Length: 461
Image (cartoon, rainbow, N blue to C red):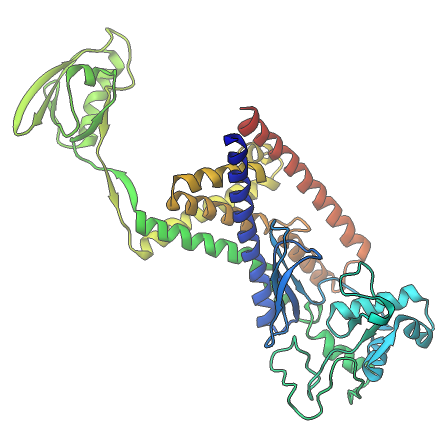
């Protein structure tokens, strides 16, 4: 029974920590999209699922909620998937003017097949420029796996803003309800540009890259703040440069000689010492030669001398005395500087993953979700500080991992954006798919290797 409870404990903490960190990551994408006036229709804790608890925001239109698949989180930013079709404009104009049309009507009006009509409507639906209309008379429900027969125009205010657009006001005269047709006062192409400007693909290169970068950045910043706070609150342990010993290891020559914690070493074989550095320097040649020597120390105001008996002629690596360790509490700038060094080390370590000569070296020291779950559960059992430290390490690693130039990581998507900027034209869907498949292949390889390591480390032992 205890074994089952232990597994539950491990799974609980692994799922909790990973879900929160992925949710925070997606929050970075969501907030940056909102900052650039790009529509975002959903923001959830948990992976996409038909079953959910949610609430739709009146101010921004986004549906916030949670799903039972607590293995991360997601946000739906409009226009993330590329789509270019000369018939998008007339399709959007048709739905907007009529208010509600079936996919078949769009196909008939534009003289295309039904599948093509659905492709257009689904793209516009992804932009939140139109929305699916589920007709109860046809037995259609929002939970069905297929798109409904018809689509409709969303509610728009007098300025053609939808509920997902900042500054919308449906109280203005000239606003229309969902499913109600209207004249936009623009040409079909002008209105399409108006709608595209509120999608991911419709903003400039720098804004697109900023939205992609925001997710990893939030993870890194969160970890940075946690580590900095830990340095300040818990402090940094260091060896005090004094000759006072903090303890004695059992079974060592120092323990046999009767030395105790708090003793102040004053001489080593006749050589005066007053600091830990001097003590170590004096002991080193004696330990290397295995020569017996005398230690003079003070205890409770009295001075005594003892003989440290080492194995004759055999080099030894310790006497058995422990240094005095003090704790220093740095201020914010000092703590932040130390955290910056730590951040650089993590970034350098993660970057080695894509250097062929170091890939396996990095993977052998990395953990999968199994290892993460074990580490977080052990840290949670040890205390809040230990848990915070592990969370920070995972968050920072997650952030830098997502910046690797490997699709479908955010860094890979930024790489595709840069390539398209240099080429001055979009990559073909086939090229993007090829890069994504190669990236997924590498990610799968990484997952298998680190999972194998974790099974050997934590399960097989």
